Image (cartoon, rainbow, N blue to C red; front, side, top):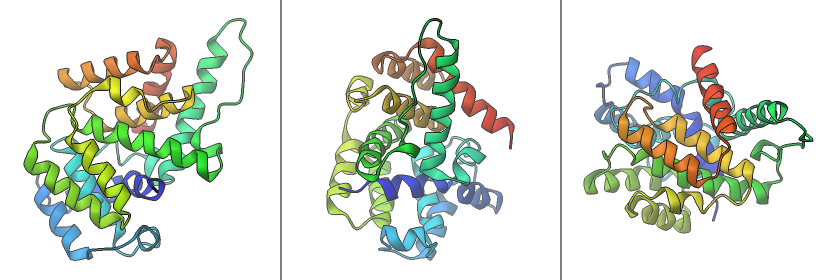
Length: 241
């Protein structure tokens, strides 16, 4: 199963989503986004998407559905538009280093974030991050049965991999459970990346979503100082735009 290319395309599509919204899509953006995705074509594989063959519009449509009525401002930040998945790893790396520097009597180690891993390990991280991303999209309760079908359809256009499509369908249909999400984290770096992706997806001012983030951090066993560093990295990127 290959989720890395799909996740990278979703993360990079934040700028496309912002541009489509600025071009006249509604506050929720779903109608305009889906219309743009339909015009871009269907059935493109990940290789074609990464060459820019309509992939931006398709991925923006899928991301718009995942975000619901939330602002795309965070997903359009520099953190994700210039580097996609690799940039997520860079943010996690910075947060880890800052956190380690605060720890008294603790030797610093090189964080093995996904931007520094060979392809097989990066794929494992990517699947865990995508799991966290899908779960975070459900944190405000907006993903009902109809929207699940729409999201499945849009994501299916982004990858021909049947295993990925079945996996995504299963994740979308699961009840929201931070315990289940946290089980996917097998390293501290993976936990940090999953939390970072979740922060990018949610509206932290929304009570349900803030509560979900806090519980996810607890289940991921994130040190409170590392949790704060990850959130600070997101805020820094938002402030740079």
